[in-house]
Amino acid sequence: MIRLELTTTSRVRMLPMAFLTTALCTACGGGTTDSAVPAVQSQQVDATSNKPPQTVVSYGANAVATWNDVGAATILLPPSPTGTPEERQPTYDLDLATLNIAIYDALVAITRSYQPFHASVPITPGQSDLPQASAVHGAAYTVLTRLFPSRSSVYKSTYDQAMAGADAQALAAAQLGADVATQVLDWRANDGRWTPVSPYVPGTLPGEFRGVNPINQTRPYVRPFAMARADQFRPDGPPALSSTDYAADVDEVQRMAGTTSTERSPDQSANARFFTDPPPTYSTRNYGRFATSQPSLVQNARLMAALWVGQSDALTGCFEAKYHFNRWRPTSAIRLADTDDNPATVADPGWTPFVTTPNHPEYPAAHSCSAGALAEVLQQVFGTRRLQFTLDSTVTGTQQTFDSVDALTKAVQAARIHGGMHFRKSTVDGEVLGMKVGKLLLREHFDPTDKP
Image (cartoon, rainbow, N blue to C red; front, side):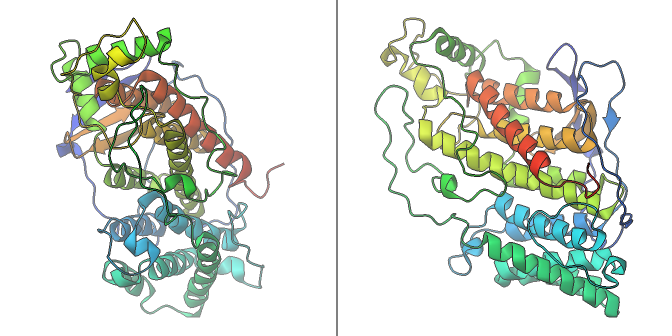
């Protein structure tokens, strides 16, 4: 067993993936369907507490988990040359946020246990008695049918199997889910992912990003789900090239993250590689672990909607900041350190990072933006920072079990630094951006109806 020490008070366990079971959920019901769901109150708990962490457990297969997995399988197919905007440019976090909001709002229309995120449905006689799983099927199927009509072979059989032999109540619930989904889809239509942008011109001045045809250039123009605008939580920016903080960040990466570094430990190398799992598959697989972690169907829907909206808005805010500041990556900073007007940095023209650097500007770190949002949503929903949960990576074939949400964000921070993709300041500010998104979400959305 490898142990990765992150702090003196938190520990991450890395286990071989042979111990991991990740079967696609195909059950279409499940979950407690009580309409009166007790509010989960948020509380700040010190991650250094001596109390054992609360463990994430599974309450069993349910319709929310099923459609999260089926939706991911649909969305992660390669782009199509023709078709809907989503088929031509599927964006896993945006499309899964839309899917899970529709599911959540459909369940809220029946249970009335939380405030809806977007869709408004009037109360009708007998509505609270409708089968909740059928509403999930109707909402999810409607979203996928409209966004990805040419991919029905992935999801239609799940719907057909779930609704086979449906009685009048189940059909009514599915229709309610479809009506809710239509409201959500109309709201999210033309979300900005196809906004025209000018061809990117690589920078030439010290500090400017040097990439050619970088990715996600249109992301700053996507309409957020919960944020008022993409730049709502834009950080203050990276340190000045002439500053001591900048020199310290460059020195850390230069020493620790080069391919020939002798200062990076095997555990640090393994952690860096762990988080190079491509975000679309890494996130959909690992976020799906939480889809059975709540005692009722609507609570699972609430958590999954919050997780995906959190990631989506965190990434939108992150890429808005990336292209606003247009900061160079460590590779350029270290190789061209003789041009930065900082006497404390030393150029190394042959320096290369331990892992491959993504092709988009450096500041802030996108992985830290996502991790910050994930950590904040989990803390808010479970009511503690001392939460034990497990994530896995197909790159290393291992699991990491975290004893707190802070251990996760620190592991991500260390991975991006030791991999040579980011400076420390970028990871810190990225995490703060993501946490602000998470706080906004649970402060202004997903409230229980009986909240004082």
